[in-house]
Image 1 (cartoon, rainbow, N blue to C red):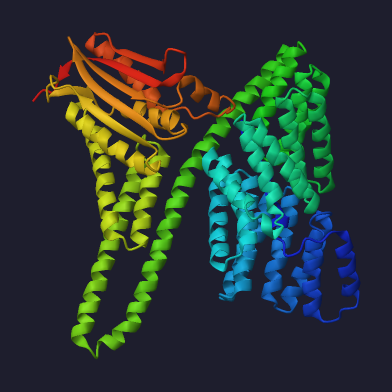
Image 2 (cartoon, one colour):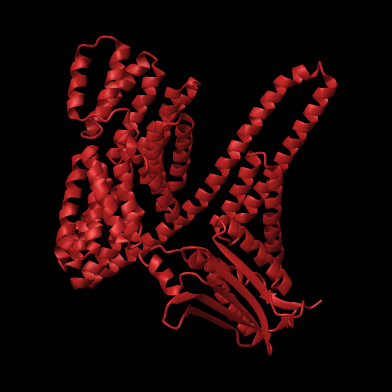
Length: 638
């Protein structure tokens, strides 16, 4: 299931973290202030002071500030007013209105054409807030774009406090697109800034605890939950505390302590209600519905499931709607109302299909987004170079010979970059039409792009050559139903070498072919690649330490025997790691390979064998997984 994480809400980006006493003090100062510029600034500060207690008051004073800033043409306060209106809308669950306000804020800031530290931080705050609004809407590709832009600004400015907060939000996004490894990486990075009394530490600790809980490491999960609870005592955050209570509710459900779980979920409801956070409440209601269902208190379970479903419809939360519909179907089934049980089951199927479409689109957009971002950075660099060349050209007229040599060299570098860019764009287009793992393809493209940006043209060309060779082989093979076995081995060799780079030399491999196999022995095109990919991702990648993959081709009677053996975590452990995910990734490539084997068996009218076994030693310890394919022996016809 999709796990909800406590995002660093608006307080993460606010310039002050005042509570009501601070707002009251500022209101007294406001009454004594006559200057319109000072009044506008105070109204924005009062707005920010109300963000943790009253979003309506926050919005009211931000609107006052916006009106005054337009009167006195104060662009900085105008941008802040749009930010504060947007932030209040996030708290109230009005996400699209929030995005509209952040867009206005960004437009005002860009119009300043000011590279000062304060203006850059203002822009980063706007981008981070907009990223949060997109994240709440499950628009993760757009959210990641905004947060990565904000992160780069904070890195440039050396603002470690805000950097840790934005890293937490990026971790939330990666978790939402099922990249738990990157999510944990960013959460831990956010959690390391303890020396600055960072409020992000409490939120990141809650998030880390939930990842470990999802991995069934309850000791580490409880450790980070306790750290988060202590952190919120120092840095109050109702939204973050509410999500921590939800996480503790999940923890005690896993410990079969339903009373303790309900206790924390009730606390979560109060925390969210204190700031009218409908998003958090919808999650709390669903968790309570699950707890009561487990206690067979179907009336209470029905009450909270209905509440959660109603809120998820208002907030347009497709995953929560799907989970609610499934639970409601189970509740009505237990209550004996088969008609309503069937109705909600149908609704669940519709929501599930809708969510799958959304997730597929998000994955596609996320891949495109990250590639386009890197590409745009390269284009900006080229543009800056061109401007610099124009200035140099006037001087080069006086020294024709040196100027000509310099221009020739720069033009040569530029042409190389344009060539690499063109090839990258072509590979990107091709990659979107291949059934390869998009993470693998994107990592290759991103590595090439990085080489180009660092002027590592030789490395880029070398890497690009290897990648282009694999792409060329793949495209050539797609036209044929069968290829010579040496070509298949060549493609696998290229693929495994690139995957070694992707996983940072996480595994070694070896490919063997028996000497009695003829060179013109045929094998179905790209038949083994999905199984090798599975051995990498679900076998050696989760393993502690370095893994090893062995591929062997042998011949027995009239059959070609292909084996893929890894020393990874094994089938059962792999299933255990993925069992909590409702939307577990289903490899389309493996499904297609299975159908190809069935079709091949019918065409050849010969038995095609596929065996998948978990390897164990004498005492039952898992040694890895072995896949054996037995194919009819065929030869390439000239």
